[in-house]
Every structure is written in structure tokens, then in C-alpha cells.
Length: 186
Image (cartoon, rainbow, N blue to C red; front, side, top):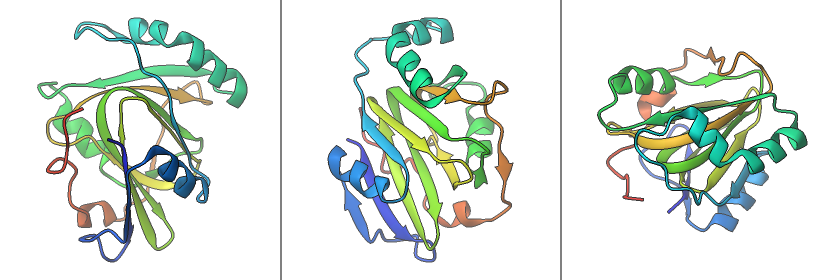
């Protein structure tokens, strides 16, 4: 189940508010300029399916979003618990950063957690299959895939170079409990 937890940035141990229904999550995030939608990820993917197969399976909604929002490229990030690069990838995304463009993800399998640092609050958005999130450009955030990651997400970009981050150097991500203990099966 998707979930939104809202924390004070100086009190990471206890959420001030927890929202578990999709419409409620979308409404709370919309107030902060963040798009959250529930799409339909109805294609079962085989473990060996690569980027081309995933993009082909969701070509129609991805092409519609590209046209509507001006995205020029899409790629796929897929992680499994035994991925050779899982530790390095998790560490990289765990550092607070920003982008010069929106960060758009459509989760077609699995689960992961975005942490959005919005003023004095941190919004933890636990995304799972069927969730589309668009984090506006220059929003401070980090992503935690957990210690045993299992997800496939389609990423969309306006920059043909793809994922380009500007790390803030702030240690805030280290103060929040890592995502993983609370991971539910999806």
C-alpha cells in the first residue's frame, strides 16, 4: 500500500501525519506542488525483461505523458535484492540532492521511498506498483530503495542526458530511519 508520512525535519523519529489512501496522498502532495497519481501497471514482467521490453509494455501512457509534459527521453531502473550494484546505488540515492528538471517515476513493480525535504518538513512517500510521482525541479530530496531492493520504475526526463543530480551535502538523510524495516510485500 502506498503511504505518505509527514515529519518535522528536526524530529525524524515520529511522523506528524500518516496518509494511506491514494486520493489523500495526492491531495496532500498537490498542496506542495508534487504530482502523485495511481496508474495501472498491468503487465507482468519476467526477471530477464530489459529496458526495451518494459518501455514497450507501457509505451502508450509514457508517450502521452511525454507529449503532455515535454519529456524527451525515458529509461528504466530495475533493482533486485541480489543486484551486484545495489549497495552503491542505494548509497548514491540516499544523499539529499536536487535536479534542474522534474524527477518523474512510474513504478511498474515493487516498492521504494522518496523523502522530500520541503521547508521544515520531510514528506516520505512510499511508492509501489501503480504509483506515478513527479517531484518538481530544485526540490531537495533523496530516495531509499531499502537494503534488499525490489522495484522497476520508468523514469522520464526533459534532459536527454537523463539523471543529473546536484548534491546538497546536507546530512539530513542520515537522521531519518532507513527504509527497509517497514517494507511490506507488494
